[in-house]
Length: 183
Image 1: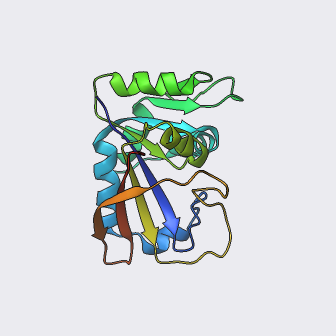
Image 2: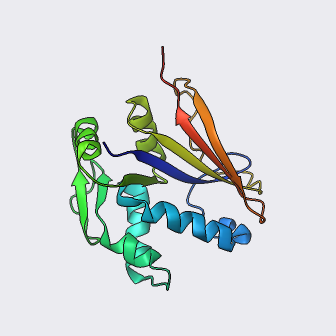
Image 3: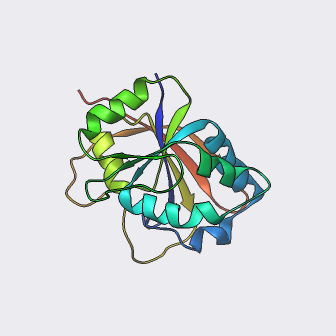
């Protein structure tokens, strides 16, 4: 069975919205290697509509020597949206209904990990239904003061178990968590 992991950029004050330029003040060779390694360990993206639209607007025009852009543009992208009618980015597939059943089927297919980037609402839905195997927070040493948070006020409480950390010279700390099964 494939694993689903979420990878999220986050500021110290919990802001995780579209990162724009703020993470790149802390970018380093270590951060680039981490992101490339997790991408190469995956063979599909699972995205919510907002993240998909941002990625689809940017990635098709990108190139790099490491192969990151080629990988992003070529492998399957599964977009969870009830409002999109089409998904034009290369190799994109819409999931418009039966989200839990469709994602469960994806997990049962052979292959590498499935990566969720951004997509806070989708991540919460999948966590609520025990479909996420790992959450990776790429914590940046910056306070933004305002912005969207990964976990919204009013959600049901749940626990995560810290399974590993990585620290980069730029101040970024990667926190690896696994959901704790509810009793």
